[in-house]
Image (tube, rainbow, N blue to C red; front, side):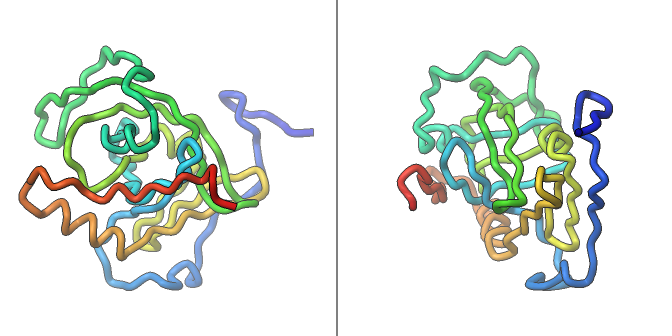
Length: 191
């Protein structure tokens, strides 16, 4: 029998910890952001920024189109979104999508509300605090890991330092009309 705690979340005795083995494959010292690959609506989406400083999940318009999700599925948004410098940003709308983090059997799938933006970005999407909290996640930037509670144990999503570096360099470039590589694979046709 499963006991339930606050907000009807299952209580668990699982412990999330890290050790020196969590540095395997991580080049230190570094200042890299955690950039991972997620499964979103049956598509593998690369260049996903984990940002525990963001109060919203962000999905960029080009990715929405690549996922074959039309703008007609967007719900209107009443609350404003503000950028880093406090400037208002136009939100196209909001959409809820299933997002899977981790690798079976230690993975978790949650419904994520994304605000969609028509802006150039080095990233395909941003996962913010609401989703991280829904996952029961701990973000270990130094270890380049996102650790979370999964039904069959503790799940891990490892940051990709090479991809993080590419995103950083892309973000530094002057904005052009050149389209960025989206990095999405349709998983419905993979065996």
